[in-house]
Image (cartoon, rainbow, N blue to C red; front, side, top):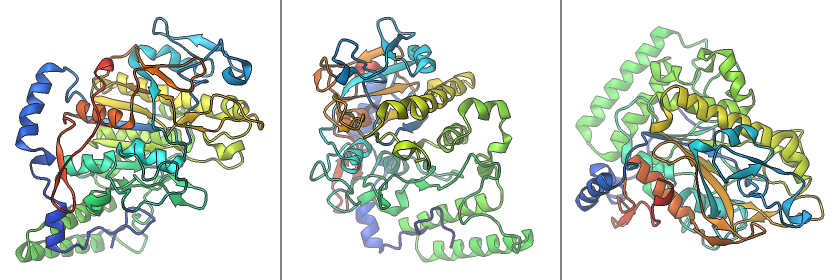
Length: 463
């Protein structure tokens, strides 16, 4: 049995037909007739509706500090504003942190949200809200596990439920690893939750910075020559035909899709070639940067070109650096930002935008700068900043977003919103809007009840 992650994910849910009928019920791509009619009205009213064919979630796990990025406070006391200055950007009136000079030059492609609020100061529970739009029960729960009642499907899972079809790759892929707290506690909100495992985004654990890129568990070993692979493919086709005669149900359909995709990758098909970064020019790889996260961003662009609808790229920890090379900078905050975090972010984020733009893909690819929260206004006794979900900054580009815009205002310490507050559910509603789905597009819960894919409002101010 092929495995697409190192967590033992099954290729078939193995659920009884009755359960699948209760969980499934997603017909018409998850849209009710009323939602379809409303979406046509919305499309006529908003040029951004359905503009994006794909989404890349640029995930800065650990929390982006608003003071040193999109919302510097030069007039605040030193213990609030930090040690860095600010610079002008390509957007008149927008000044950003001095550690992001490349990003500042591209701000005319970017919309900034300066008043995002989750109200949650814990990585895993605030992260759950950012990826699903649903507040964790309870709030401020660190090392929370993915289990009911916190099992709402994330954006990638909903996209799979709405868009998965006969393509060679699934509609949603996560790179280069899952998000976890110390002790390898995976955050909730990274899978399909109550929708069922057939809609889980593909989680590809990989080291794309290596020249020999491969999938864990999917490499064809030396003891498997081509003719044996052909025999296995033939056996798979016979099994599929037998299953089709036996039952034409959701579980069987899901099995065939996963099995065919796995066989395509194993056989070295065109879909598999999307993961081969050796096809890229060395100059392009170096433009992104040769680290794991940076090369995952380049891989995300290739997957978008191959037809994947949503790619989430998670920042990964780096051994040997302060704060494990992550954005959770409880100590030596300024040092970590200056020596590692901001330069790498600035390089690979702008490389991704430039690359998409040069290929004519930026207008149809929505890029979302994502983190689970921001950082505390006041610097702590270890020269660090702690968790802060009461106001923080995010950004979007491409895919129907109006660049050079700033929405929302925080107070003089970047501690609380003053106006233009955005909740995670609003961000998610906006993502689906750009993909062509109104917030009231429906999926079904395990009891067959219709549930809207988002409880938020579309952020029209940036579209």
